[in-house]
Image 1: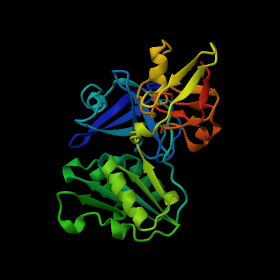
Image 2 (image 1 turned 30 degrees about the vertical axis):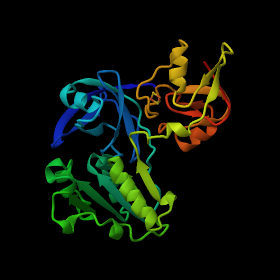
Image 3 (image 1 turned 180 degrees about the vertical axis):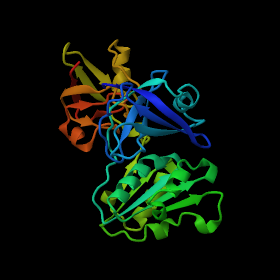
Image 4 (image 1 turned 135 degrees about the horizontal axis):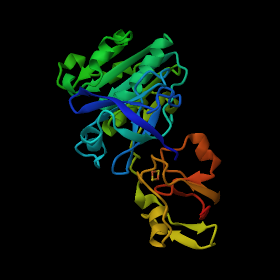
Amino acid sequence: MSMIQVRVRRKLQEAQDIASFELVRPDGAPLPPFSAGSHIDVRLPDGMVRQYSLCNDDEDNGHYRIAVLRDAHSRGGSRAMHDIIGQGDLMEISSPRNHFPLVDARRTILLAGGIGVTPLLCMAQRLAKAQADFQLHYCVRTPERTAFREEIASSGFASRVRFHYDDGPSDQRLDLAAVLADSGPHVHAYVCGPQGFIDHVTASARLQGWGEEQLHVEYFQAAPTDAAADSAFRVQIASSGDIYEVPAGQTVVQVLGEKGIEIPVSCEQGICGTCITRVLEGQCDHRDLYFTDEEKERNDQFTPCCSRAKSPLLVLDL
Ligand code: FES
């Protein structure tokens, strides 16, 4: 993964426990273009890599803006962004990737849970510019925890946004049945937020007859998999011809690591792409969130930190 060096031009406290960061190239050159829904990988001081959605206007590639929630349950990434990274600091990021692109729709419903607003804010800006028919429902615990509240309230699309506060009166809570009442094929919904929020929205939508192709979800954590349902397979190292068994409950990275074959890893969840390895033969069972569907179909590389095999043997270009 080739990285881009950026400088933190501005760090702002956007809400309780949420800071935003404006990132620019140190030499002022433009950054790679991006589309609404894109995210970047950010390399943190401890070497770990985290994914953050871009939440600025997608026509402005002079800078990227990300927002980070201080998460008490995180493995330290959000704490580093809040406590260590400051204005003027240099960081490394990847080029933007988009697994959550907007599709053409007659009507678009954006459903944000907390910090999940970030990609949806970018989408709202894009849809407003295109004068599209859309609504943004922004669910958050309290007004104090609502990132970009003032920015949204004073934007040109404020009339298309509804804030729903957990601590507010019941008549302003999100009425999902009403919001999702129209399940016609011309309507598309985009959901980003905590897993429970995503599950609740998508389950409600399916109950109301929404098709899978109308539901777009952004995950930043790999969905849990059932290791008990995994089966064993073998991997062959192309350069040596050696073959190793990968049992259920162990990853390719773990098995090869025990044999002294180290594959660099970072997230170990299939989201950063650090471990990408070329596959010469065999059928991959992709478990990552890194590759696009087309890239997965090519079947020529996989993420051995989490992905497995559908065929009895995978030959790896190692
Ligand atoms: Fe991040 Fe494998 S280590 S995708």
